[in-house]
Amino acid sequence: MELSWLKTFITAAEEGNFRRTADRLHVAQSTVTLHIQNIEDKLETQLFDRVGRSVQLNPTGLGFLQYAKTILENYNESIEYVARRLQGYQETIKISVATVVATTYLPSWIREFRKMSPETEFSIEVTDSSSVISSVIHQECDIGIGRIPVVQEQIECIELYNDPIVLVGPHGVGVLNERVLSTNDIFHENLLFTYNHPLYWDDLLFQLRQHVSNVRTMKVSKVHVSVEWIKEGMGISFLPLSTVKDQVEKGYIDIIPFPYFSLPSAHTYILTRKNQNQTINSFIELISKEEFSFTREQL
Image (cartoon, rainbow, N blue to C red; front, side, top):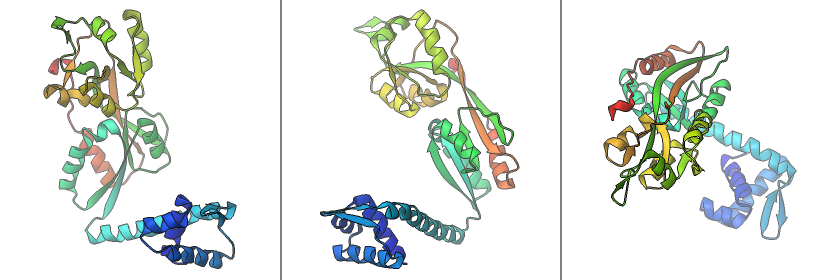
């Protein structure tokens, strides 16, 4: 069975139409029909039900689809493996990382480590902190870097840095019609973007509502989206200082004084299964030795 047949089969399953499949693969429709017929002849069964000009997988075809995808994925991975070896790479470190870390510190860590170990390559999955934990537990990555700690016998959890939470808004948020606004007024004039961090929001909102009435909120699940929307003047939020420090220094975002109670901190953790190899341990050692200094008074 040829790989080109499998590629055609998978595409046809996604498109549900042989003509669109041919257009997508840049081949004649007769070629698509031939490839599907060849597979069905090999398997001695039909994989599609024909409904007018459309096609849809029957139960056998649906089951075979998963195997076809696996075959192509394994083939592509094998080709990439050989290519990496030819380029001089000897080992791959797989990292599952929360977006907020991937867009701040991870690039410099990788750049620094590659100076020490140029034969090592990286495979990066950028996701949320909950998925980072899942990837580590199911051994889908070598290292997880996220905002949620783990207590599990087989997982080593190392606190990497402690990040103060600050209230931020668009530049000039504290002034309206040449009138200086109080923090209370700022809340009443702006939407508060919430739940862009996995841990601190429930307690923070509970305390905030003891001091500020009628807080209008909007759930925005990603930190980087919250930052961009704040820059556009769409609202305010409580965010880790490291995620807004650059934008504050550039004058796009203002830190808003918060007089009501002490704000929490966000913690970042390295998660890894115990007994990793020396290359992985060396990378963990590198980033563990980084010095992080975040204080609200810095800005």
